[in-house]
Amino acid sequence: GAGVSQTPSNKVTEKGKYVELRCDPISGHTALYWYRQSLGQGPEFLIYFQGTGAADDSGLPNDRFFAVRPEGSVSTLKIQRTERGDSAVYLCASSLMGAAGDEQFFGPGTRLTVL
Amino acid sequence: DQQVKQNSPSLSVQEGRISILNCDYTNSMFDYFLWYKKYPAEGPTFLISISSIKDKNEDGRFTVFLNKSAKHLSLHIVPSQPGDSAVYFCAAGGSARQLTFGSGTQLTVLP
Figure 1 (spheres, rainbow over the protein chains, first blue to last red):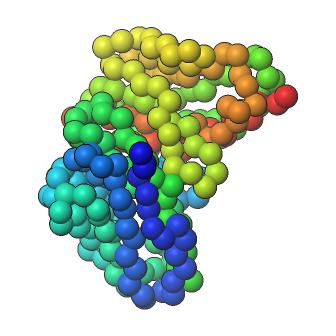
Figure 2: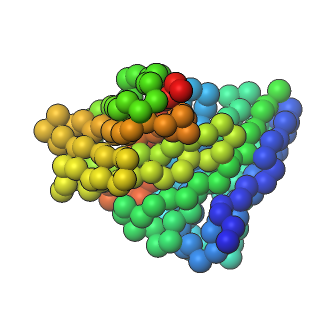
């Protein structure tokens, strides 16, 4: 009866490197969301998937950020040429149908540190 | 521009008393609101929600009040317990499926 899981839990990388963050949503949930939480702030929306397709990627800060969900389950957030400002906790959430008002279930997050 | 604001970064309450956490929003297109609770090193967990067509929703010790004209909502916890100590986030949603979060309030319930 697993909840949303995210790997790795912590990732330390150097400026300019490429990183991938993985999210396993709750089984059967069709909607998947990525958020980013900086210190002292609430989560900020990045991208939302309905099935395999990105339904809304308006929160991605620039073209260094990309996310995929090729089979409608696991998702990977990819960050190219990382910058120190990318350091944050990256949260993934899933919901059953992605309907407005659906509860979003969050994973524990991946803490990314860019040195 | 912050569309959802939690102006109190922290709140301390004595065990057994009422905790009141406040949230203001600016976007009148939001049509549902949620409260999430977050412990350190864990993701936010859903606590309670309210639709914009209601002004109150209650679940056990937790009650959320919505004042649409003031664009204000509040979460009441009574009686407060030490296990309620956490960061509480107010969030809002509309036709877009994303949630917009406030910056959180750290609640400390003192035994």
